[in-house]
Amino acid sequence: MQEKSIGIFDSGIGGITVLQEIIKVLPNENYIYYSDSKNNPYGDKTKEEIVKRCEEICKFLLDRQCKAIVIACNTASSIAANYLREKYKNVPIIAIEPAYKMVYDYAYDGKTLVMATKGTIESERFNILYHKYNNHKTELLECVGLANIIEEGNANTIKDYLEKNLEKYRGKIDNVVLGCTHYPLVQKEIGQALGNNIKFFNGANRLAIHLKNVLEKQDLIYKGKVKGKIIFIDSSRKKEKEERFFKFLSRSEIL
Image (tube, rainbow, N blue to C red):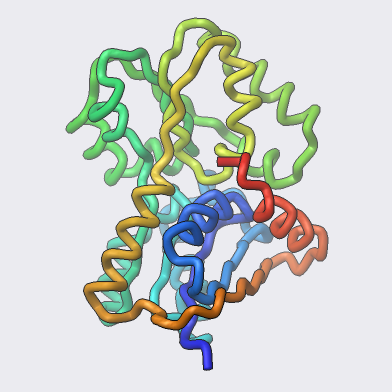
């Protein structure tokens, strides 16, 4: 009998970029992925709205016997993670973070563009990280509406948005921090819009390793050899969301 699941949630299907990395290190776990596309994007909501919605989703996942929760949304992590950890003290809650420290570690001298939602860039959590590791060659870009455009999946709209909003950075950037889990889905298009050899950074891989370490310490790892199952739930209940989710899940080149 397979044991409890790991719950993962995001404001849409963007968190699949996190799930892909988690599956690489924990292939035999069960997963319940909650896509809150009905309320996407989170980046344009108030802190109170985001915390309330994240609390509702956590309760939904815990009611389905999830043994750990992964917040696969930078905005939700920045604003709601500490509150959720305080409320659900007996459950590991692992939160994605913008990978700005990775630039400090691996590409400090490069000119860096942080692409994120308004909510993430304005959050206290991100600003502590930013000021601690600032290389003084960094631009912060609030990508208003980009997550929603990616969610909708229209290639021409995505291309137009990126070309318009990244034009002034073209040829001037060495590193890009993808501060929203939706953005790796269009990493190739971002690189094309910026026009040179870009190094991309996102926090999905580090989150996956951290999740595995936490589960091992708490003896919550599934020790069987049976490959896990993935359940997808979307708040909008649109069938095409599920179809796109599993289509992206089978594409390793998105990472």
